[in-house]
Length: 171
Image 1: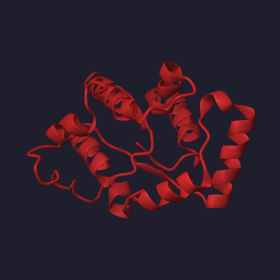
Image 2 (image 1 turned 180 degrees about the vertical axis):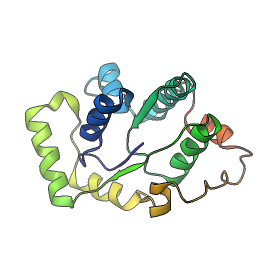
Image 3 (image 1 turned 30 degrees about the vertical axis):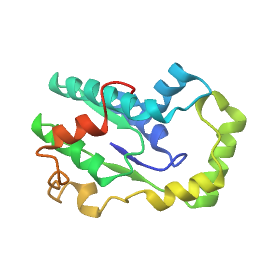
Image 4 (image 1 turned 60 degrees about the vertical axis):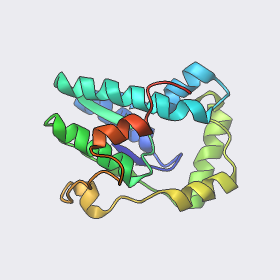
């Protein structure tokens, strides 16, 4: 799993890992771009993420390596995926990517100039808001030594939470 804000190197690393480990790389932005072009509708984000997660879990069942390549900013998202993988007997490696704000902006501006078809415009205000909202993984989360949290109140299982958080259809 790759964790981090936009333009911190997640997809670059995921592409390298994909080649080195013959892994299925599931990169949400590529799917959103293919389906919606210049739009980036909030209503589709979690649905696409959820569909990719289901593909990833099925691939794990079949014995393949999988890379979930999108921000995973919340601990609940990461816990739900760690539990889903554990339920299948799969090992999780979590990689966290961070950069100083100025370098992140430089990379975003470069991407916008060189490959605008791969991203969307992002304001400094959005980047700051996202930086304030990400739940940075703990060292124990990153190295797998920390137990998986129980599901949030109101959910009996992480599977139940996953289904609600990543709905099967756009509503």
